[in-house]
Length: 401
Ligand code: LLP
Image 1 (cartoon, rainbow, N blue to C red):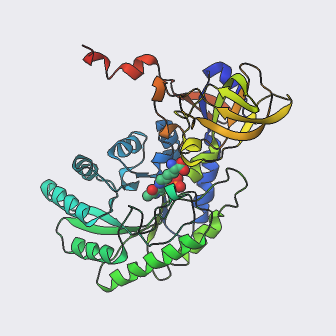
Image 2: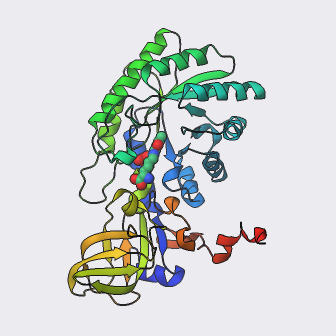
């Protein structure tokens, strides 16, 4: 049991809290599901890029799936071995490609033919052979929120099957490219297994086609996307997930790469905020808290549901919106939800906030971002200090005329 009141006293609010033991449990359950094969769980750093979180996963043996050179640097700083780091993303800049190649990470995921050309040129300049993989867009509807669906041709991600073949042939014939992997990721917060299995079948078939022309890939990268329970979703069982994937790989001797983000971090995280005021506008009741959309954007951006818990409160229940102090009507954590009456400084916990919470935060309204705290084996420790006003103006101050 996490003592939220004590943590609020010690670290102030708003506050992110991550249960590292829970992250370990999630990691181990997925790792176990894939035990029948060589498998690397490459943590999707974007889901929560705090260095201590990444280090915790490094200690468990995780690799890292990175989408910017900044994330690659974080992964290396946190102790993820370079040979377990991959670099994906539709728009990598030349300097990022160069640094990734110089860092000798496991491979770069290519998302277009044009990008293949850039990587080849940069590898030639460095006089090396770049290990690459191609992100295939299998044109499968993952049945998730449109903003986090990525596996349809209408999405900007990856390339179609024909283009993928062309790129592999080009890579094979290049002195500076070494095709080692194949990648797909059809979306995030997936709760249905069938679309993932269908995508794996398509991509595994492509692997076999490529074998026929002497292109032997070593890594079968199935992306991330396993959904979690925010509410009462029925989620994918890790064992069934692994079985579905492995079932498509008969006869292929490949290492599985999996890129879980949310599955590892979402339900290990809590966002703790204090009630400042209550107000009634006509019939409508608002609870105004000290955390805002700049801290946790998911409700505003995706109308995402996060379970709300009032701490130590047995006040009378009635419906209310929980809103933050930011000057936007979209600044809310819950709408028309049943809540007890509050007093000034009462605590509210927003659940499942460990993934895409802090990382999507901003300084909008000149609000410093929250502190972050880890809990491990019953002990708490600060893993990021609260931002101050001085932090916020530091990059502008010297230019004041
Ligand atoms: N691999 C690739 C190539 C990805 O694009 C993503 C997520 C992942 C792995 C990790 O997916 P996960 O296991 O966490 O579902 N901000 C949104 C989620 C965006 C996901 C983007 N890509 C949200 O708050 O729901």
